[in-house]
Image (cartoon, rainbow, N blue to C red; front, side):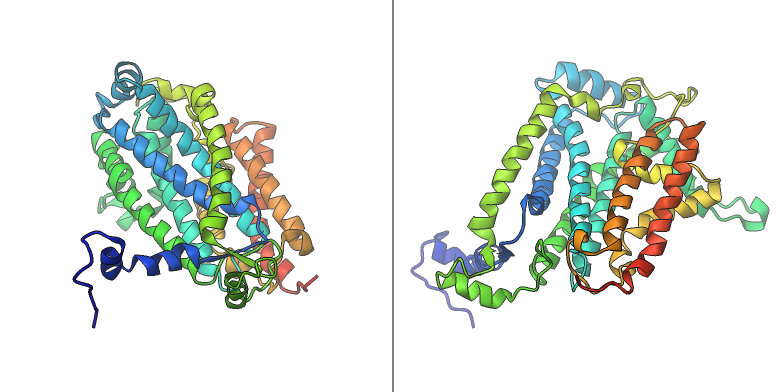
Length: 413
């Protein structure tokens, strides 16, 4: 039975602790949440992602006050009302645009850090899977947000990407039954129009942010139980190391508390990051905004070259060199491959890639290949670019197919 001190003043520490167990929460989430000493600044990317997501929510709320989710008004509400008539509206749009791009840069750094150090292994599979689910949700959030300015590239990127779902359309009796297509179901029309914009507006401002917040909580929960990995992949007795730390033997201990020790390091890295962030906001915001998207959407005028935002280019290029059906399979494979990584890597070794022989080569080839795919995805599919794109796409697929074989017999260094 719970016991309450009737003399405790309302909202005092004791009063709150008896009702919310704030001391217990503090221990579980901060002061007795133990982090290995042997980690570097790359482990701060998770907190940077959370902080950037917070900024995106705040800036999005300010933009939402003036945005008009109407095909006749959306473009003007973004490019004229917000940018020229609302006080500091340009600033909030720049913050939102730069944040949307940088959040993916940090995601990719975070993701490749996890791959390099094997942070998806030894009981940490759920950390990886929840992180990849966050990647998918952030991708959906970015795509839905890209539709909202209702510019020329927004419209046609929406047209092309939703056309990919045409592969799911049933063909009953050779089309004689006139079954509604999956693409039309998503758009709410035969082409992107008011229903399309309204649906993606709802997804962007309500449903997807809620889902992202829920999965962020799940991701942090999965981190709490098997504990954070370290640079060497070493097994740490967290209980013994925590005991040494609490006894004052900090040098002998292999761990530090999340708060305030590790958190202070996170804050320092975030300070450096936000210097870069606001430098881009004030001086180079244009990198996050496609010039073609400053033209109003026109369904009768196709852009010379349609492409998605830079963070989708690698997966777009995996699709593009092939015929429609094969391209859909390749695209689906690219989306699923990273989810399967903990199960495709057959090695029991948890160590940095530079100590894992063939896996080290595999890692760097994957990183370079994804950069090549991203570059090719922005270029027109013609001549040598098409050949390079095809080779890069086949290389990406081949890397994940061969991964189980090159890691099966791996031995500890």
